[in-house]
Image (cartoon, rainbow, N blue to C red; front, side, top):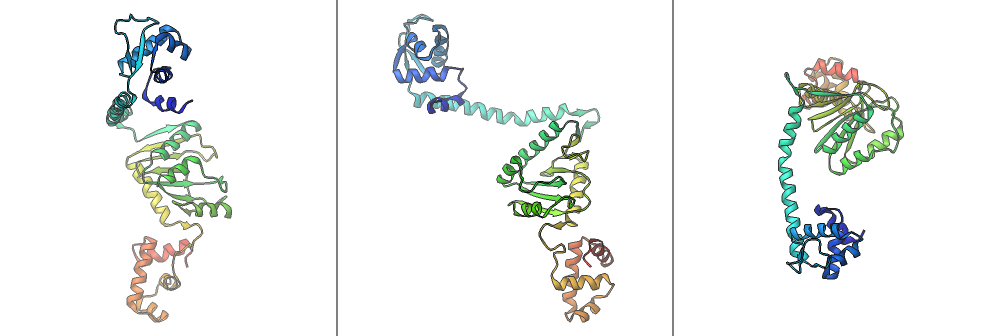
Length: 322
């Protein structure tokens, strides 16, 4: 396709009009018969397309007294710089009107999913094609962050095209991975992807993803090619899933990093704290000030999301930190 013809294809011209207009531009002036010959069309169809060009300011009739369908009627092209600019402006205006109507269309879409009890917070998907479509839609519409639960089967070196496009747009991923089936090759690949932070958690209940904390796709089976899932919208149920992810994330182990994230002194404080020692005793044991111990303990409580020293000791033991 000539570059000029390709450039005109986005202006919404009727089929064949672009080629006819370029033929008229090349000739300067021509009869209907000449243009029909150049484009391989009938006199009738050429006349119809020329009338469209005339109505949109792209062609001028050389003989205003010529009758419709006259094969000898002469035509000339209007200045494309002025005529095409007007057509482009018209389409830009129409596209802006469409864009302005999107909120109203979205509201109509939401109303269609309401029941007498209000809008349903979820839809059930019962075919793997629907699950894949909703997941790709979730990635395509994401603007800030994807929260993801991922399980085997893993394939080293494989990142889906939709995931790549989403990362390239600057959307960040936080991914929880099940250690079962997670090979060193897969771990290294996950750790090398820019924009992706991956952690390992041993108790993932499902596969799924949440986009911008407003929509999610959660699987209802454990098959490699998931055929059943829930598509969730903003609701207390989705808020609960976000809380579940954040809690699991705080207790997960970073891929390729220190599972505790503690320095040597903090590990020693943690061990003595779990043994039930007071701040003063820990300070004497480690040869540091009580103030330093208290600062380390506060950091440990925050890292473990613990509300008390006893809770911190229990949580550290559960995670295998001591």
